[in-house]
Length: 493
Ligand SMILES: *Cc1c(COP(=O)(O)O)cnc(C)c1O
Image (cartoon, rainbow, N blue to C red; front, side):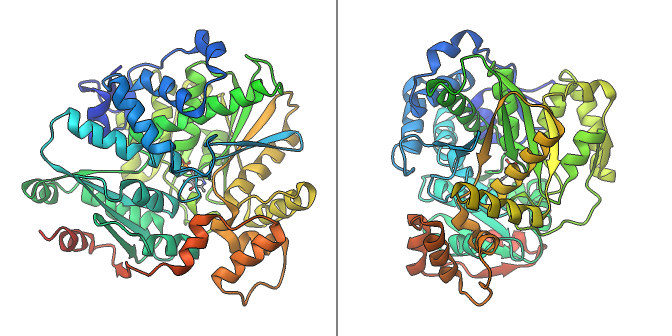
């Protein structure tokens, strides 16, 4: 298995090289040279544990890792960091299923990839005999940053810098990052929203002079964002795992199709579902659920992508994104891997913020459909699910749940639905609490947490309970044109 760029066909890399490099020099994203076909294997996989399944699936992609290397990585990621050995348990709510992806150290789905990716990266560095230190540089809408910090902290030969939008993350997310421990970590707020932070970081990546300075000082830049193939592939596993859960509990028969409903921002999570489908998982629809930043909803409806809109701050901040980077990987497949076409499309996108795809490409996107929900609908849905099923969902999961309802009212659907639940309700406690109860305006952050715990009759998850006594370690705020300075100060170069 090799990795190629979506924007040219001159380069082929091994998995470990693609993981180190992150993004191709031509600006494209790395994709596997083909999809492994697991159709014949499905019946043998259904009884595997999460770790065994992860090993089997990733072995097909990371072909330059030895069995021992890969199983060490998987064990380091999943043996102690999650509060359940199932890693991603599934709950039945009415006739639908909720796949809980928030049982890791930072209570969001990004933990599933970001507990594993640092080990994949470290192994990749060793395999390629690199004598440089990796500098992981990440802009976050809240959850990636904390998950990356936890994953990369105190890993040898790696330093990690996270910039978050000062005005674009929840109080708990902010506190999680500002209290981050570890001797190789640096965290700072950026004046502005997520797109400001993200474009400032992208500028650093494409600044040749600055990269030369970094190299001279022994560093190479890498990213923990979901553009890195090492982040994407671990997410394929839970699509299979949840499917087999339904098979094993006799909710479906092997080879029955299911729908997956995915709260979407950067299009990384749902793309992993598409990869699973391409590998032979029986999927009917991948339902792409957006908040009011509904560029993807428009895209699936019209074939036109337009980022020239005002970014809205919603109650699902991890999805407050106008440029869904991973969509490029899907477009690459939809035009039968025509890298010239993709290159031209994104060249014009970088100039105009707009593109339109051909009808032929649109026909190849039939696996997907898009819906979106307003903050008000999100709140009503949290309330409805809580009162009807005594189950608390977070704001992002609610976007998905509400989108599924819209899908159901538009389609006669004979398939089971699996909703990906991407965060613990405690991470977005205030908005969740306000959805089920009034009069919380004067409560402090931890009073909100406590009240949610009492009303929801669930314990406060340990990573949040522990936050109470943590000291603020990082209290810097930078302007978006000061990133270079911040990086140089931290690295002492
Ligand atoms: C990141 C995130 C999402 C969106 O996932 P993408 O892979 O960016 O589409 C949804 N929900 C939560 C809680 C997240 O942290």
